[in-house]
Length: 282
Length: 182
Image (tube, rainbow over all chains, first blue to last red; front, side, top):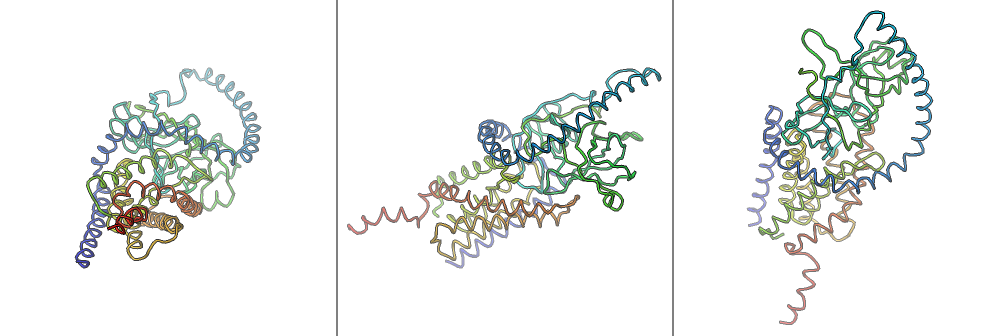
């Protein structure tokens, strides 16, 4: 009797292990219809749970932020000084830009390519529990015009892109996901590269494959490059703020062709995001 | 554990609630920059009360449900959770659980094992980005959180599944006078 039970237990275990491998293989072959269906069915429940648990999340968040507040304060003061300097420089540059535009007779329409996009606001309803996958689910989907690869932003900057879209929900691959790679450039230095994450550290991105100019680029802003060539175009419009260069040692720039970037968007505390729909398909 | 349709419904409800709480609450809060992961602890508690088969099936089902909701690669979370569910169940079948600390310590150890398992599978499947050493801090803190969260989870799951637990001390104590009186 006992042996029969053991045999049955082992058979079920073997079946479950084989089942896991079959599912894994099926997923990597591109079959995700079943997941989409389940996600669509449960997204309203997740949305309700998300709203109901918001006060509790805020309470825990308050404790966490209190621990960080002291370090944050001094960092913000430094940033404020830099921002003032940049604002003055920016105003001068805008004035010069307007004068130069008049000289070459350019139209004065919106300069940011993002203006061609339509924003769809979504609420974050679920988040991946592991750092190896950095994704969130939002309560807007293909029914709202959201499509795969649409850029996603928050009030602070770029957050990621749509990885999959169902009728009532969609999954956002964050900048910190290991599969994320976005062409970006440092402004005003003009150095271009590819923004990649450092898995496990949501406050650090790596701007890789950069052409070192030997210039000091620490503290400069990083924005999306938004390239367009031979009928192909980046999914991201040019000029979306991504982050700020925090570490740019000469060795890393010369030997590894990379610098470190802190994302503007707080990717760990996202409540609402905006999906930029329609832009590159128009 | 005596599995009746009512107990199965309760287990499904516990698993559903656990997944919902994880994705909507625990994954979205951080203490010391790390989010707690209650799912390994939940699977361990179910396995400690129900045995290796219950643990493995619950682990597989919970993992599958999580991957479906997040539209992630199916099978990875299932594989990891069924492994720790089976392991915790085997422990329960081979050793007596006397101390109140044992479920919490098991949750802590097996959460760490689950995090390591997840890391190994992800690395085997390929990571296209550099990996930070902070991942070690993440794993260790997650297992510490699991130690503290194991208490309410274990007590809650045991309370919900009490009618099915043949070895529950409270059930045995209540029956003793009846036996002596006959």
